[in-house]
Image (tube, one colour):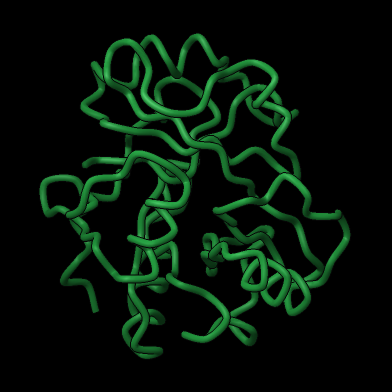
Length: 203
């Protein structure tokens, strides 16, 4: 299943991508699913029904959480996360809730996740390809994930329709819920596909 793990709706003030744009176009862009990860909120739940839509698109809701040590994608039962935690407390809290943390765009020039706190114990994966990163920034993330013996995921980080589906992650097991997504991420049942991801062999 091709899932875009990092999508911002216009609930995020920095995004102009509406729910209707996501739902109307994701399948035609080749996606089987999207994870809407707005900044520090799951408010999009007031506008959508999670799960499979009428066209077969899977819609799940996570969050991009802001900490003093950068931004992190969180998946699982994240609605109750309180704002303002540092990265260490966030990671502990999400783990105790049964969710997972992904280090978002660790080498971006603004709001990168702090590599000093990214370990295989704290994060389930590193976002090694981000649709808003430069080639150099994504390459650095690839190298870092290999050095840390961590798996890499991708996401478009879409804020506009033309950015949606730019970097999907392929899940090799069926996903139908947040619980399935968390389990697949923990088990490493995903991959980057060469036709989408041209940096897999970057060094």
